[in-house]
Length: 263
Length: 133
View: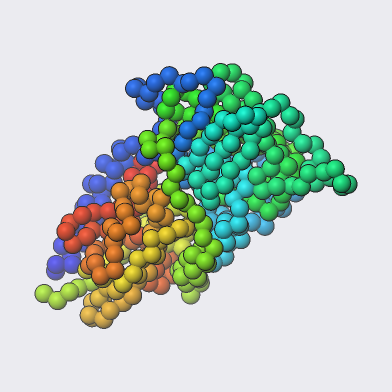
């Protein structure tokens, strides 16, 4: 009797409360500048920015045969092909490096920029890694992974150069990836020679609009405009310690493996 | 009145079916159309850690038998966004928990909401899920 009343109460609350909750703003995912934000400083995106775990993404263009083959081999934890943790081959499950551009497309809760002589550093909260974005005018390397001695090794985060397109838009180009990381959390591919463009447009003091485009003819039939997401100025300007600890990640996977197993 | 379970597998297809994931890891193992309430659950342990927290609970079922449930929670980063601290839930607490249960019927789940003995309510990702609808 009491259980029945409780059940009724829970259902009633759910039906009433959910639409109300739906009207609440989405935290840390600003879509428009705040009225009181100050003006954007000229040629400066330094500071600590916060955003969602996973920015909203556009659907990819058709993949090439190779791209589709690589994509089909991935078993992601996110998206329409998501599998339980016990069945995934997502490199992040064992705390492998996230790599780029995934670092711009997943686990984007916190990052910072610092402008220093000859380069801009991007500091990523997730796993506490950094990217060097050279601003001294050097071109992107063209010999990554090539045979011979005078070559560059493919990297998880590639090689990056940056320039100011105007006083408020910093453009970063990156290439030279290894094949051990995914382009995003859904297992989309990116080849060694992909060129990824990030455009950081400082809307005002408190808002940074980030666009990401992957140009990778080996994997996609045309450039893939992935996302445009607004990040907000972190009030405390302070990182959280967001580490993937291998021993804890393994324990997590083992603990919850039964939840995803077939009975 | 004896302590009583509630393992209410309340089916809420209409309100929860289209909720997208905001978790770091997959929640495909959990039935997001169902919300199970574990009433008067005793916290055996709670690991506040990445990638997700692990909350172990003992709950009495209809017969009075103690059933052990294991729930995954948000990462510290995600939970702090929702107002949690490391000591929000600790071993020994008696709480009421809402969770999406495992699809395969095992005693696992994805924690959604906790009500503490003093009436404090803590949630994980509820605002984000609601705003996405």
